[in-house]
Length: 396
Ligand SMILES: *Cc1c(COP(=O)(O)O)cnc(C)c1O
Image 1 (tube, protein in one colour):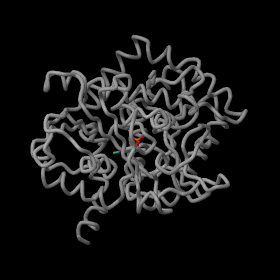
Image 2: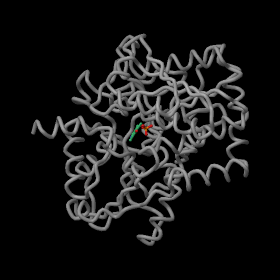
Image 3: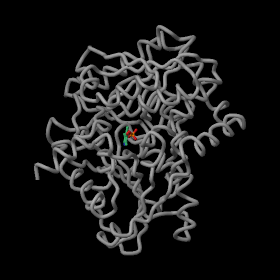
Image 4: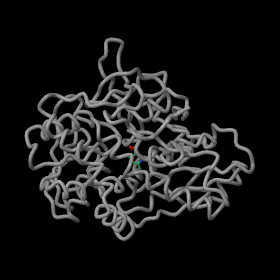
């Protein structure tokens, strides 16, 4: 089996990916496509990127042996602590990379889309760092639900634009950002927040997040004597933290790669975000991938308790890894994620992001041996989810 984590030159992973763009986006995308690899592989770029990851983001993020959790599950569990990064999640790995790229492309104006606001905050942060103008599109419904992150973005100097079209959530914000990019091709770079959208975004964002598994290799070697774990578990919204955690292991079939989708109220219900488990191939935001859709091809509005997982599609890399059987994907329901979060807080004193709690809930679904090495990618911290936790833990 010849399964790779990089896209071919047209942006495909098997039948998934590509750039299904309107004519008017052609120039923006071709500029990026023709230049991104040369820029991000240059020594000048690497030096600045690695320096900022170290001194600004706080990398390498620790690989923590979770002793009490391990004891509970009868195996050896390590947590890759992306929750300890500046701004509280893995998203900053990507925005730091893209802001340097944007500077090298001579762009002065940055746009982004955001759902829960985490990517918006990470983008506003690096725009402040570089002194660039920042506009964040956010569904009007999300602007109301995520007031704290809106305040943070504004404090960081970003302009938050509420989007009133459609369901007024992430999908509509992404449409609006693409529209802005079409109108402002010369001045503007669009920082997409996950491994979705037209080529080269999925490939580029995957490369920026791949630092996660790069660090894992040396950290595991030091702690266990081998670079290779038996399992890597990660949650899947668009799929960027999982792609980063899987990247350097995709071609090594001894390592089992497992993803957790937002099951919501259940993959068999209408209230779900499980696009790999229940979706069919389709095109959304200029990219072909598995997609939640009705029989006549209408996109179904996704639902998950976790705002970072409720996207109706998924990165084409994951659709491909799923189709080839290289990674396995489970749908994790809201209740199981909440239970896993509570367990993590009680056993380890770590409050995980609700998204990451979905990855933790996988621990209960697997059949581990006592000497297996299991890495859970802890994509973010739970500060942003306190209201949900307080409300839902009280109900029990
Ligand atoms: C945004 C987010 C996710 C989901 O995005 P991916 O691209 O799937 O990684 C997961 N965890 C946290 C903490 C997030 O902020």
